[in-house]
Image (tube, rainbow, N blue to C red; front, side):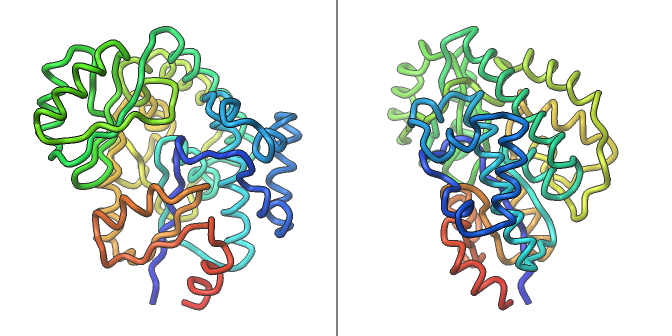
Length: 302
């Protein structure tokens, strides 16, 4: 029998038109989009017809991704597909918190809007960037970062892939060092040095916003990007710290596998997390909501 985990993606996979098919085909999805539109007018238009540049602005990316992902999760819930656990990558952790009931839908969306504003403001204070480093073990990437001031390992994605954040001016020298070490560095479609010390002020301000909200017991185990473990007694502190701390994605996936999860449903506009999961365990079954009908037919039958 399938033991399912829902995994919610972060920034990078967004594209103009994401979520339109969900909106048009499923009432559950439409209700989520309508809620988000009421709270932040223009969200639906940005998802469906915004330009790539508009969607790439963090203050827009995060609420739009949240709306699309929570809409997809609502469809799965309506169709009776129940996960044994949930996790989310960066922004996706907040969406997972809403899907799991840790935060109510409206509160979570307001927090995501604030999170996007804070992270974009932090990114604009200095010229920074992110890149994925491929083909090197994590120890080698950590050593290269340690030798380059202002560059940090931030997302531990899967074997042979770590994301780094840093000052844009330092990246050319870092990329050269990666090539000399036998690796490859790929710039990412984001506008800031997320999950690094450059986001400390944003994390502190988001923590103050979280103080004003009520958290509930999640319906299923919900994993923290900071600890790679299910949430304990202080989810607000973990959600705030997550902004300026590394994402331990590989450790989260291995923890889910150890828990008995054998089927992962990627909830987001792309397939980035699925690719990482397959690198971690090639035997795991991976589905994506970008192929909703196939997902419903195969996972719904398990």
